[in-house]
Image 1 (cartoon, rainbow over the protein chains, first blue to last red):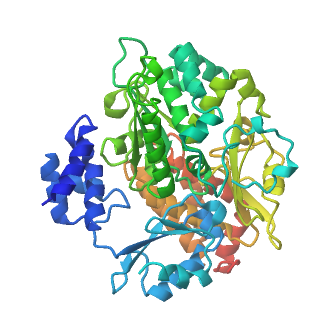
Image 2 (cartoon, helix red, strand yellow; image 1 turned 135 degrees about the horizontal axis):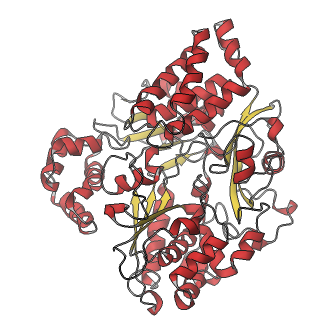
Image 3 (cartoon, each protein chain N blue to C red; image 1 turned 45 degrees about the vertical axis):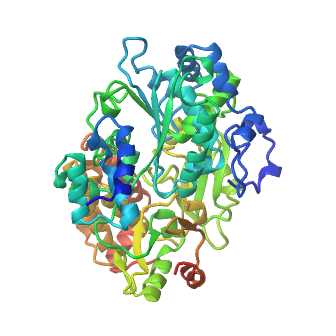
Length: 154
Length: 438
């Protein structure tokens, strides 16, 4: 079931588009914004509301890497693993994060605090290596900086 | 934007039109400040005294070529849009702000540094093709740019530069910010249209070209952020002035160039189109970090062929980089040093392309993961001699003409040139059964 708030936000998007179905990505974003991720039930609810099949909604949801079809932690770490960060040493950051958090890419810590994901180039190549935690971009990160940065996200 | 070298340069402020009002670390101009420096004068001029066709002609004559990487004449691109009272409506104009080419960070500078410049460029371009609705397709990761653009679009509406009957001209335009949810494919023009329609971002067959049948089947123009940012300056100062900014015969204007990798001062700088690769790396990026030597350069993002130190004196314009066997691409170069393993470097690139393949066509969906696995085994010391033939074969099979869009052919560019310039490194991995760099 979609909430009133979600329905209002989806309706606003539908109004700007020539037909309902075109709002599916926006609807997925809205649901994820409120619930953190998109469950099977949410896929069904969006499908019913936009009058398309759940398979069609899921095919879109699973295409985009920032729509989460599994529960995620409270904070999402997006570690850039593209070429400039590769050259500048993202692998040592990844090794240190694995050790500190006890998780690999695609996993969530036991206390549900962090999910660690690889991300394609963050467009911050002149300050590599870089990663994002939620909306915040961290530049020229060194292993020594990690404890401080992680402690900012409780 | 780095400013460390500004005292050294003799270029006056007119020669950096796109970035002269960008001050890194400061908030960008709000509408009032932007107007005080001549902002929105070009909209007043074009809507008040030029026809849409005249704007198209002006841009065509300026030799502005698309800054997203393809390098097609922008005015020419616009000229294929049906015009006049019989043209289908609504027509759409879209800014491609899905900057995701690995190694590329130039549009971020323009988006965060001067959002009104982009909006003004889009209003002018929309007028030139008589568009009704415009979108900025922004990648998710650019959170700061999203905030700034949202605020700037609101300001432009409130001041009457967007909305109905702009400045009493009879021309109306709406503008929306669309933030994406990931995938490199969204940067491909027709895949971007599918994403905006709420579909998987797979490419479309051409023809029909977007100018005829684009977003929701209506005439559509998609241009890169940097391309749009040039338009207000062309309208204000003319086509001849724009051409004179460049060091190149065929390409007008300045270019936002960038350098990343193990250089002393990585950054992005607006310079005349056609400066040399040597000037970029040695002067603006201040050369390699101590203890490192330059081994190779991807001149314009991950999907361009390697060049080598032997190419340092080539001009960074579309024709010169092509003549050297690569592409200007986005103009943001990635430098590979002598301590970085070329096999590992190319493996990282192919991992990216294999992951970002949309799966629509077979050579790309099946071929790229195969290439990635071969490179991975060579890097881990498990490569065989016949792997070199397999890699070479893939550069043909995934090359131009065999795939639906440019993703796989782009992926093959750094691979084929690495096999040419760094063959010894590949051979050494296979012979020694280990990575000599680790």
